Length: 354
Image (cartoon, rainbow, N blue to C red; front, side):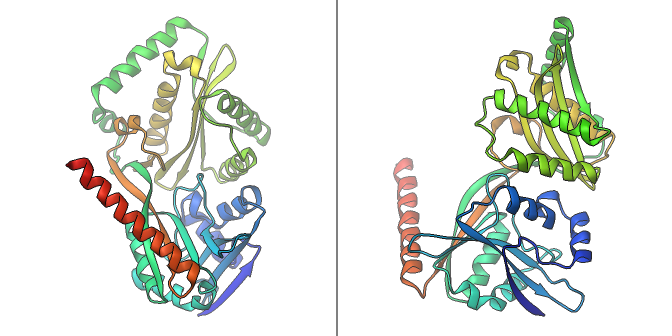
């Protein structure tokens, strides 16, 4: 295999390989996701770089990264942020520990330029695989908790899914649906944009809801629009909207990739909380992806919000890893800081139990 370092590009795979990955992978691990992330989100004070391993067929795995500029320390980051629910070595099916090690060793001279490397979000197994791989080239790895992922696997049918939900959630549907009916003027359901114009109208409605919600202002709305349009063209976008007297009051953006559904964005106007429009809209979305799309897996992506436990049957941690170059002063300083931080956290836990 040959290794290549390509700057100012988020993807360096041949077009046919990229097209296959854009079909097989979840939206947020595809080359197209990273291309749009690079275009709409990436900060301007650094460089995007792709590390690529290629065999004779043009495949072999790649890693989209971000070189930060400025400061005294050279730092390298995964091309991710709060929009990103996952990060991994792309183009290697079910990568094993030796795949990570082979990749790191192939680019050891490049990685050695940096004092600190930070990848996230990762599963615990991925974080440990990267830690082990970088240890072979003299980096110390420190795994830290990044977020939480709620999911529901083993979905078989709609009736079985709702039967497994807490009675309080099912009762909420009945009460609030009746309240909406009596109040009048509400329309809640899955929307299906039949044209690009219709799609942009629904996206405009969604953004109106988001900007009126309890959430902070959307920092990169153009990225949301680009990803939604991309998924819509592939038939993978699922949008839900709630209206009151024609005014949008709740909106959701999901992706359906194969037999898996991913809940990407949720928002509702706070003055409609008493009607539980967000909950009623969520039920419509769950009904659709289970009954129509026949998904077997539903993923809430990131965040440990308490309400997710009512909808999901599984929970796992998401992690990051700081990799400190032991052969540099800056890397050694980062490693020392991580060691001291670990001691302090353990001491705090002991004192809390005392």
